Length: 111
Image (cartoon, rainbow, N blue to C red; front, side):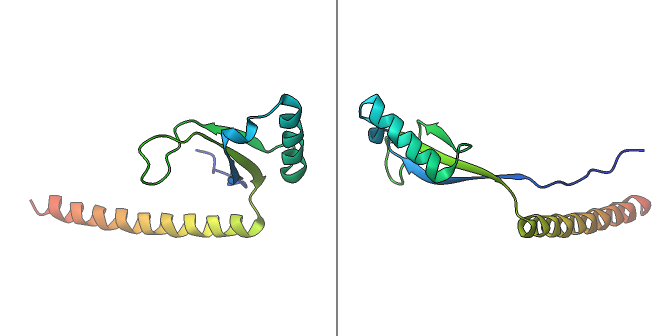
C-alpha cells in the first residue's frame, strides 16, 4: 500500500532587488561595505544570482544583472491557500477523468 504524501510548507524565494554589475565597479573594500549593507538589510541567507542573459523589454542585447533573492518558509495563510487550490484542482481533474471514463466506456460498450 503506497504511503500517503504528507504536504509540508514550502520555501518561497523572491527577488527583492536587482543590482547592476556596474554598482560593483569599485575597490574591494567598498564592495565589502556594500555586501555588508545588503547582509544587514536582507539577512545572511540572502543570495546574489548572476543573470548574464537578462533582456530588458524591446532590447535586443542582454543586460546582465544581479538578482538579490531572499528565501523564507511560506506563511500559514499561504500554506492553507495552496492546499485549497491543490484540492480544488484535484477535484476538477477527478471529475474530468470520470467523465472521460464514462465517455470511453459508453463508446466501447456500444460496439
